[in-house]
Image 1 (spheres, rainbow, N blue to C red):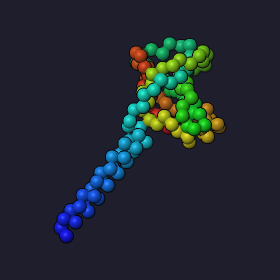
Image 2: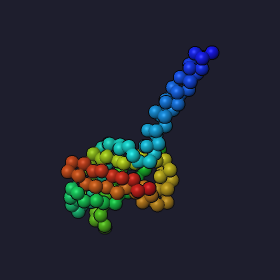
Image 3: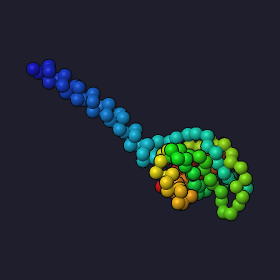
Image 4: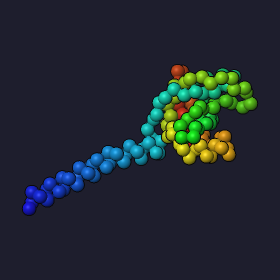
Length: 126
């Protein structure tokens, strides 16, 4: 009987351990603690965006919630063309809830971004 109890407790420990291994990364991702790196189409505009400078940016989501592009144009400058840029995102990069919000407000998915030498780092605002 004692051996059966040990086996049952070991089974419970394995189930709890596996559940935590799945739940903790998902919770960290939902709160923006895990980075996501990808090349993203970005609109910088005509004004120089120097390394070390921050900009408020807006993402345009597709219908499935993935990001179509990131707009980081400062002020009323022209958009020019998007540039493929390596971006490290701190926050979720697939948000189906932002698609519906963007239909009524184009600034519905906001990011705060830091220009680096060869890349951009962005933190989710909402």
